[in-house]
Length: 312
Image (tube, rainbow, N blue to C red; front, side, top):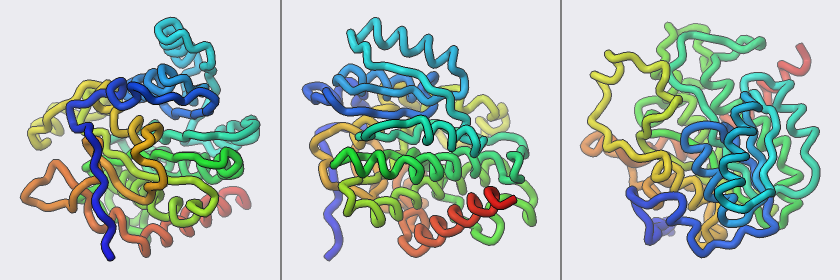
């Protein structure tokens, strides 16, 4: 029997504050990556407003501390802390995981890079795949004991409509054989983050952990800093959201009681996405991004890449 599509009273215009109104996260511990800018700030603000203890996992600690002070002053929540995390550096991820102590109830894999020039990590991994997927994969799997220890935990993996035109090319995820295409590389990395949610939920549901993917929509943030005027001219006519609206779907998946027990799905505009169609190219989820066979293959490939880096 096919699963029924999950909807909520919220929609594309709802804000993160709307979603957490009346929600009590007191006693819950959360991590938001990339929490010092864009929708990461608003995700953190909403979770803190609801009473969660939130760790801002950021590359720029000074910027993170500034945001933590601003949110703390506005919410009367003193349970905000900042920890360094560079998702493109596996040693930074390992250090973050090693420093975490105790249960973790909410992990929002929010940070990302987009449309970068061809750049590679020390291991030779393509930067967007390494940051958007591999870094978050290492973080989430490393924190799995803490998530399982919470009893009931949620993981949110941020994707994008860019995934729709970019199925995984498993034989060349790091663009060693293909000419580098920065927009295609971004799309593939976001297919990867969606597939992560499918396989992580399958593996971890028995531990009380639900994992979902979220497409926040189009928002004017620092994520787009590498886009050129030509890129913008070729983009579809997106209906841009505010950062507060962009954070709503992430916060819904992280905090709303309406999503209890629901996992392995792809959400946008505060509802489970419909199937992607070229006739409506700005919405929906493509089959290749929720394919359980591809999800399992990506999981094993990710383990192999990380293990190979450790042995090198």
